[in-house]
Amino acid sequence: MKIGPYTIQLVETGLFALDGGAMFGVVPKNLWSRTNPADEQNRIDMSMNALLLRGGGRNILIDNGVGHKYDSKFASIYRIDHARYTLDDSLRALGVSPDNITDVILTHLHFDHAGGSTCRHTDGTVLPAFPNARYYIQKKQFEWAARATEKDRASFLKDDYMPLVEHGQLELLDGPGSPLANVELMVVNGHTMGQQLPIISDGQSTLFFCGDLVPLSAHVPIPYVMAYDLQPMVTIEEKKAVLARAVDEEWTLFFEHDPCTRFGRVKQEAKGYRLEPVAD
Image (cartoon, rainbow, N blue to C red; front, top):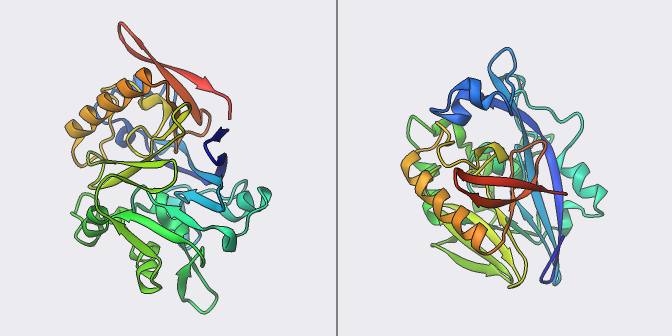
């Protein structure tokens, strides 16, 4: 996919699994399990898809998966699977090394989105995984991570982002804006405070990085909202606004956690929105 100065490429960083009931909130299992069948622990298959934007002298990575700092207990709980895909291997297959990454846009600081931002060396130190990159996060999200509640505290791991501060590589943004050419950041607050979602556009073609606003293609229907969301009613209003704009402006949507449908477009119908998958 080509938009403006950028060639946009899928970066598969690994697989994991989360509780299907938590992923679909009040939606009954006999509905969501039709598209997302659960394992014996009620977990559904999920990807940690990232995007790489190449052009204009920049290599921009949007999110980076869970990384490799976890222990065996953590891996078992979330059924983390790097047998087929890793962040480094996927970048290498595209001809890009960690040193080549110039910018990292983090939608938010949950471990499955920001864990690959840092890596643990053999001596135990945790350092930025992309030594030449500038990392971007919303100030509101950074401050929220520091004082997260009992509901979401387990989703924030300081080793994923504090080394970025210590090495002077983290830039805190204050609200919507365009830190990079042809990249606009939309700020939403339903899932977590200050989640920033990139809109990559050249005025003719537009790609929207859904993040955890619409994590799976199965979440396109308005009532399909995660129990993980801090403010589910806010998520619903944010989804309504985004999907209406996506229809009007013919956006392509990118689903970060969907292991099968990565890209799609939505159409408005009498009963709601219908998704038309788009090839990778």
